Structures are given as C-alpha cells and as structure tokens.
Amino acid sequence: MARLRSPEKRSAILDAAVLEIARDGLGATTARIAERAGVAAGTLFTYFASKEQLLNELYFELKSESYARMSVGFPHKVSLERRAWHIWSSYLDWAIEFPLKRKVSVQLKVSDLVTPETRERANAQGSALKVTIAELEERSIGRGLPAGFAGAAMSAMQDAALEFVSRQPKRRAELVERSFQVIWRALK
Image 1 (cartoon, rainbow, N blue to C red):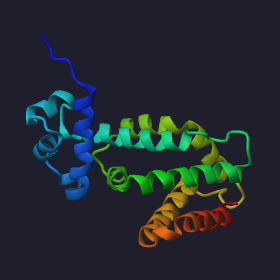
Image 2 (image 1 turned 180 degrees about the vertical axis):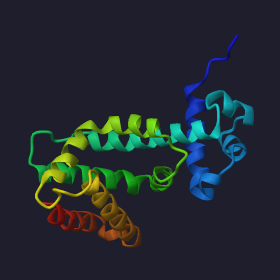
Image 3 (image 1 turned 90 degrees about the vertical axis):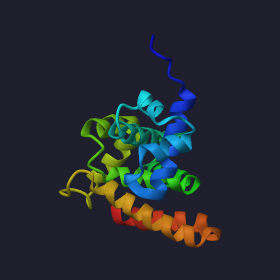
Image 4 (image 1 turned 60 degrees about the vertical axis):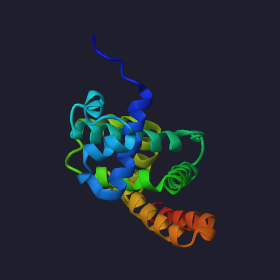
C-alpha cells in the first residue's frame, strides 16, 4: 500500500530547498535539503522523483506565490499606470519580505533545469498581470520591440530598486515610488 504524502512534509522540503539553494546555489544537494527538512533522503524522493522535479516544483511554487501577492486586490478597472504601479509595488513588497525566495526564484528563472512546460504552467498563474504588461508593450515606445521587453525592463528596474532598498531600508517607500516613476516614464 502506498504511503500518503503529507502536505506539511512537502512544504518543509520546498522551504528547505529555498534555504539550501540560497546558500549553495542550484548545486545544493538533495541530501542537505532532506536533512534541513527533517526527512530521510529517500523520503524527499517520495515527494519529488528527482532533483530536477524538485527544482521545477519549487520554481512553480515561488512564481505562484509572487503572482498571488500581485493579484491580491488587483485594480482591474483603473488606468494602466495604476495597474502597473500595483504590479510594481506588490512584487517589490514580496521580494523585500522574502529575499531568499526572490534570490532562488532569480536563479531558477535562468536555469535550464526548469522546463518550458513548468514555465508555461507558472506563467498561466498571472493572467491579469500579463494583460497589463501586454498593454505596456503596445504603447508607442514598446512597439516593434520583442515580446516580453516591457516585462524584462520592469524586472531589471525592480532588481535595481531592491538593491538600493537593501542598502537604504529607511528610504524604502521613496525608492519604490521613485523607481516606478523612472520605469513608467520609459514605458509610457
């Protein structure tokens, strides 16, 4: 008879993976992840068939969490600028609150270990957000640029904002607001 899988153990493994990957990069071992999660190494493979599957599920979970944060209270019926501000500020709030999750998410985003299917499944979580980003790309400054350029520009500027907020946390609100004004001027 197959053992039932505990959602708590699955979460513990994913949380441990965040900590180990944040410390050691994507080369973090499954043995260390299992140890940190308080489970036997074999138990980890009951939940995830391989390290690659673990990384793909972790990517999906982190993207889902950040999209969920951005979706809370999403203002569907307001100006493009206000919707873009909502995406901007809510993502930065998540990234500032969970710096290790953000660090791991960035590593996974550029990893070849994350499959196109997992990326597609994760991106499906942010449909309302994608509409806003698509509108930004349709504006005069974005016309003719490759699809995804506006989102990539926002992401790069968010990375810069996060770097400076981490250095000057007392200026957090100001830096988040002013960095948005920079990207808004570039994209409007």
